[in-house]
Length: 427
Image (cartoon, rainbow, N blue to C red):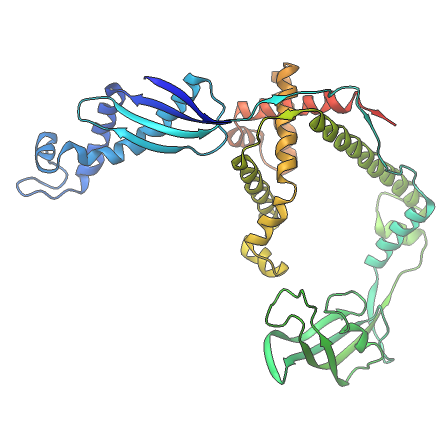
């Protein structure tokens, strides 16, 4: 294989490479064997046409496109490896020559990883504003939240109050015309929860079971449906039931109902104190890590960040988010419907910090390279075991999903982050 590289701009260039006959001829044979199976040629049984007759009738060139598609990925990867390039985006391939009996010549316009000139990344002074003290009020708030989770809804004859749940039918209309999505039957609504548009729930305070009333509201100007945004609407609402929340007594029995591992309320509070302290310690550590990495990135110089890398980071983050949603049984279509958003909205959301995340990853990689961090077999095995436990899958499945190079890269990145954060000094 003959390869060459020409810089066309910063972090951009043109690869010229050839595919030799030693790769072309076996691939042509394989393509022919696939194609001939579906050929009906007079004088020959289906799939039995000889190669020479095929070339005579159709020309060997008829096999070139499928053959190139089959051998191009490996040939391109080999050219990139031979040139020692770090390509960060999909190449734009162009065929320069595909003459019969000669090597094929192709070009690939590529984007390469930008150079990172590291500044100081150890012993950095950072400031963080994370309170690590656990207060009694925070513990009581956590207990109260769990207590409310065990509350029961009990029918009441009195008028609905904020915090009560009403079971309602409603039909919405604008200028007397009903609109899509404005109707519901036997809907349970907690008053004060903010589930409905502003002004709706407040007008149900004071209502009783069996009443029908008009709820008049105005949709917000930034409402997700442009047809309804800013418009006045009326909801004819029938209240079927009013339910009050009854919470259990705050005692040792409640503590045991909340957590079967404790016997008393004091034990539960002590356990919550430890949990909150661990959460705050993690928040503090995360803040130190974030501040130290941010400063390390500020101290580094990245030579012209390619926009393709930023776009790739947006799509990577979106895919990761959607994969997490699907593990919870929520498809992309369901997510967009539930949130009233679109794929474009999600793309814009992840665009906000994509450049920052891309730069941070580049700097971490550069630190790992500068420190010559490598992963041991024991570290790889530990990483596989932890990932298998996190995603509830066998170790072997993790190894099949993640190559050894990917695992080594991730471990080296973690070591680089540790090198920055472990030496950071908090002011």
